[in-house]
Amino acid sequence: MAIDCQAQIYNVSQITYYLKELLAEDEVLCSVAIKGEISGYKRHSSGHIYFSLKDESSALRCVIFRSYASHLAVDLADGMEIVAFGRVALYEKDGCCQLYAQEVFAVGEGKGSAATEQLKRILAAEGLFDEKVKKPLPFFANSVAVVSSVEGAAWADVQKIAKRRWPNIDLRLFATLVQGPLAPQQIAAAIAKADKAGCDILIVTRGGGSAEDLAAFDTEPVVRAIAAVHTPVITAVGHEIDFTLADLAADIRAATPSQAAELAVPDAEAWLARLRHYGQRLAAAAEKQLVEKKGRWRHLADKPIFAQPPLVLAGKAQALDEAGESLRLRFTSALQEKGRQLAVAAQALRMLDPLSVLSRGYALCSTEKGRLLTEAEQAEIGQKLQVRLAKGSLRCRVEEKELAHEKENEF
Image (cartoon, rainbow, N blue to C red):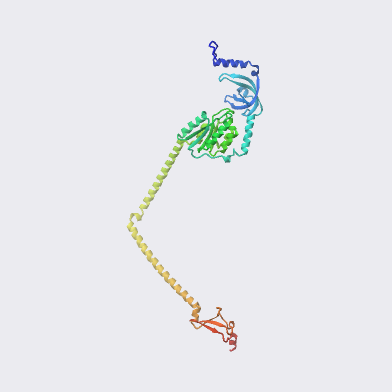
């Protein structure tokens, strides 16, 4: 296409001003009511309110100046479906059309927000957000995996903070899209891949943006991927005020990518300070032990055994001899006493010994089965008996027996 060199050439400001005037003359856009879902809501310190109105396929930037914002009848928030009344005009600074709203009426909960809340309830019922399944961060991380966009500010922030805190940290990026329709599956795949890398901690992060920009982190694939990994997960999605379902599934949520790096990577300076402190304590303890040992050594060195060993040993040797002699005398006396007691006991046993009685002319009479007889009635005529004497025994047969009462009758 040939360019007409004679055609008038406009600068950007002229065109934006022309468009602004063109929109200002449009009767529809001068007073219009627009329905949509609030996204990226922000109330500035000036009192102005900024957000976007979105539907299934489009988004329109909106602003409510302080003079109107202070008289709103409803409290606005992300996800609300509203009808905003105002005028559509061009913001010359960035060349974008936006709605300058003067009145706002709530319609209900937006479709996107409702879907997110429904998914949140389903995943919560499965226990994916329970505190009891949260994994603690390791005491000291040697390697950190990062799931983020290679071109995003989040990755740059993590690198800067991590390398500053620990220059030799093993930092590995698993690059992925972080917004758009393809982002959820890519993020989930990157998380699963990072989990298999064997790193100590996994950071899932992206920079700030509107609710649409962060929508990928409110999806089921990303939440389930985070819940399924074995590596402790830190999420840092958007700014401090942003909160996604991915944050609920993570083990720890960081307000920003920089804070995520601070949580994951140890601080070399702090560790050096801690080691210096421990070194000082160890040196102080060693010095204390040394002083105590020296004092004890001096105390022992002053004892007589060390001051005059021969003299002390001679006295101990004499005391040992005396103790030995005393022990020998006591042992001899005790042995003699035990011998005397043994002789008395032996004499008593001899007196009780049946054989000693037999030596005085008595005998023991028993049947062939060994039953002792003490009365004549216990024997029968013709019965064989054994008679035990002091020396030897006799085998006899009963020819006649004389009972005790018959003997008595003779008298």
